[in-house]
Image 1: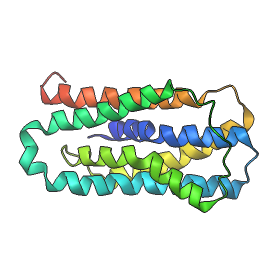
Image 2: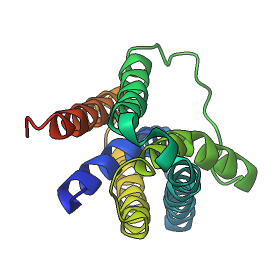
Image 3: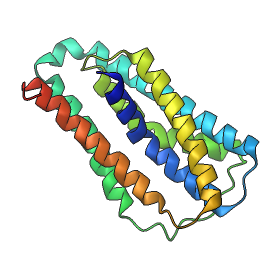
Image 4: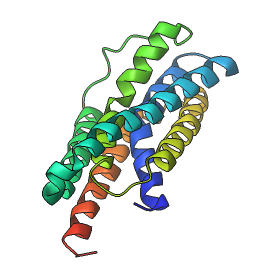
Length: 186
């Protein structure tokens, strides 16, 4: 997997964090330390989870090598479709939450990184430098979370669901690319 693909996967995975950050930024004026703490935790968990998933995927890789590309495709497509589907769900019942509470931040960091865990399992089936992936995913998520929070402060007309939809489409496209490469179309 090349850097462009890792960058796109990182962007796709970080869209949940972007949507959460955008929502928090639009709901109240955030102090920089709140934004940085949120972005750090989102980036940390988005980086740790693929590593954990990779350890699992890599350990069973030899058992499923003949179909590993289909598994990677299925995982990325599933996550992507889930993100696209969620982007169409109504968010009107959401309450304004206080991100200054560390328990809430940790819960959100884990919840938004479950997709990264599953993606990490997929990484175990394909050729990827997991340490490079972890660093890129963490940094991209951190930056995207800061941007989301600051953008949310400036405007309320950018729906957070656009970010989730776009991220889902990127993950689906990368899953299709994995299969096409294996089938020697690319």
